[in-house]
Amino acid sequence: MEVRVLPHGQRLDVPQGENLLSALQQHGVPISYSCMAGRCGTCRCRLLEGDVRPAGDDSAHTLINDDEQGGRALLACQSMVMGPCTIEIPEPDEVVVHPSRIVKGTVTALADLTHDIKLIRLAPSKPLSFSPGQYATLQFTPDHIRPYSMARLPGDGELEFHVRMVPQGRVTGYIREQLKVGDTVRVSGPLGTSYLRTRNDDPILCIAGGTGLAPVLAIVRGAIAAGLSNPIHLYFGIRSPRDAYGLDWLNELAQRHPRLRIDVVSTETGSDRDLRTGLVTEAVAHDYADLNGWRAYLCGAPPMVEAATVLLRDRGIQADHIYADAFYASND
Ligand code: FES
Image (cartoon, rainbow, N blue to C red; front, side, top):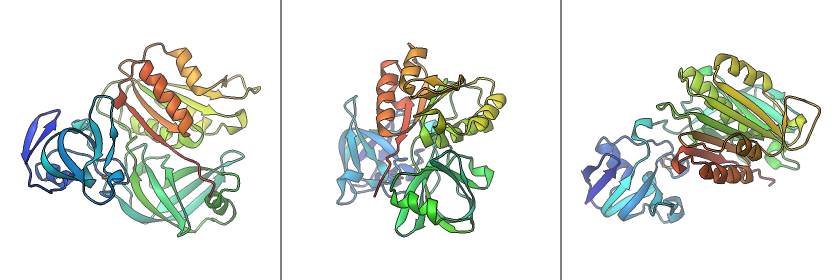
């Protein structure tokens, strides 16, 4: 079967029934991957035409959806080549490969960042490789498992997570009441496709809602560590002034990256003159009429991420240059 791979147009000869990710790897086509299990989304690519089918019974893990340009997003690791086809892989020069693994992490610090946000630091038993902006699944006990984003860089040694305590939340209740320094947490990952792209000069827009600041901090730290000089405009959206945290970290980053601009936007008003008031998307809309040529990293609650995506598309950012991992609070 001939598999044509865009954007470079390679033509691969692939046996029928072959796993698409394996076929790409065997032919030396650069493709990002991590979990190889349909969970992280890193191997996502587009089927433009032809016959590619789910590798297992669960097609929901393979074919994600039809996109605006008439293609179909799919996960290469969960797809079988059944006939001639044309696929498009994303940004072949931005390949990241961090094979998913499970490491043990020992809790080294627990601290309150705000009235309802806690910081958790873990010392991993083995280094976990990941790209800034990715997340991992933390298993506190077999019954207490949640995904959280890494706020620091892999080279920092310890892993840092920011967790908002959900009222009556079962997992966050465990974290608040039972987790202590010295406990062991199983960390599996990395997961997520909203990681820092380093090989371009495009200006960067980061929009963080609440603890969505964690991956955005990692992205800015990663940009500085990689020596990027791209302008960065970071918007941090919070509900009220008492939800603000990490301002010292942000100020320190702004000193290290002269082209980093930071706006903290609070939905409710307060006495702090450094805060803007309103929705974070309103602030972006007010500041920018045209964002053509920018790249955006979004992390926060789904309504904010969805509203921001609509706004940024409207302001001219290419759909494939908007990187978003919405997180969902769970009360169970
Ligand atoms: Fe395919 Fe994770 S590598 S979804």
